[in-house]
Image (tube, rainbow, N blue to C red; front, side, top):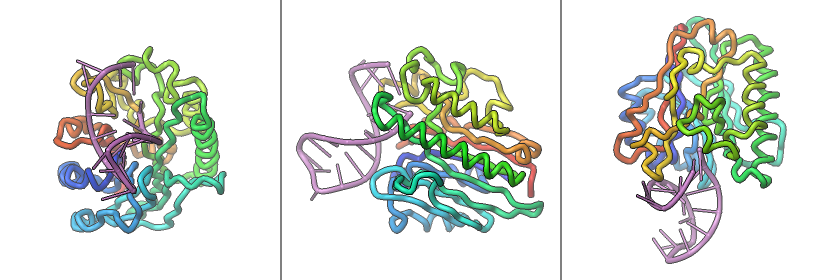
Length: 261
DNA sequence: ATGGCCAATATGATTGGA
């Protein structure tokens, strides 16, 4: 079973690229972020035509997450617990049944948090604390769990072309990285880093300043796996060629292959 | 990590992104 994550930066602008990539990579489950449209406006038809079931959780203008799955989607839950006043559409959880049991999936779009001296960074850190609590609760179920999405976290210096340029940034500040490490310390595995120590595993290149042409990238889109999912981990990949397509997102798809049918 | 972009909004300027 192939499970992917992709921040598409507007699903309406990216529907052509999304359909082309789905046809090429044939993932079983896809977590999307930054869909940037209300649920009624989500372009369902071309995705359903490829055999995907959809769970969407969007809002006007910003944010928005979705899960596509070739198998039926069950137990859909929108939103991350811990703050009833949070109206950002950034989190969607569901369960997909397979021949060998269930896989629990979360599609998440963690706040950017810049600039760090504002309440945007406070919101990011609180959101990460809420995500830690979610992970604690779900890990206790001892199921295959994949928490996939745009974490807006550069975990280590190996995950940026120019790490020194990010020292004061919300994506790289110590409180951000400490909370990402705290997720790992709970027992979650960063699937890409577990399968490669390469220095250029980037998933995002800025639209500006020729970042793509210079390979000035960062790795901020992650799939964190529970031990029961790691036991079945068969491979990982980053589809960086998609960044060179016409009308690209600034992020590219990342995926894991799990040995579950 | 800025010279250089992109998307959404009643828009020809502002906000958010990373």
